[in-house]
Length: 191
View 1 (cartoon, rainbow, N blue to C red):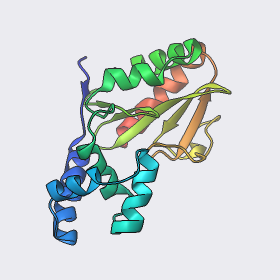
View 2 (view 1 turned 135 degrees about the horizontal axis):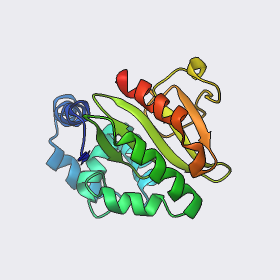
View 3 (view 1 turned 60 degrees about the vertical axis):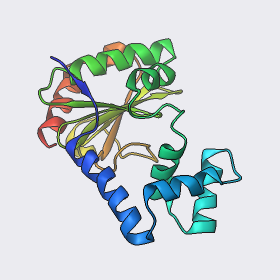
View 4 (view 1 turned 45 degrees about the vertical axis):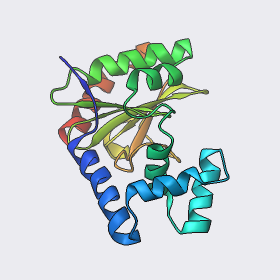
């Protein structure tokens, strides 16, 4: 089954709304904001976000959008293979990730989304994501409530979508079993 690495329809609409709202609410076009971003005295991303908020009142989502357009040299969502390779470097985590990816990509009509801190799968909405975990090997987030199955727990400051209401610690590729396949299917069905 071919899996597309792109944005979902909802994500594309969200980015379009950020751009439209930027101009509507600030009176400045994206191009004007790009020029402002290039005048920022800061060089680190977080410092630039702070500068935008303090100096121009531009909050994180809009500032991040402007910065990604002003400084496109970093790895972005349009470079999924590079993001994946940078994220998945530990051999145990890679083995776990590959097993989860294999199961997730058997589901129809999914979009794979690679981010700096996690790998995700969506249908209409994100239903699963996985990130390396130094203690466990990998942490799987699911669009299921924690009481849906044994072993699921509430998320704790996870980087992925707030739609993912539970997480599952995976310590080995063998832990990616039939139960995980069923949990992925249930989360996919609700997305």
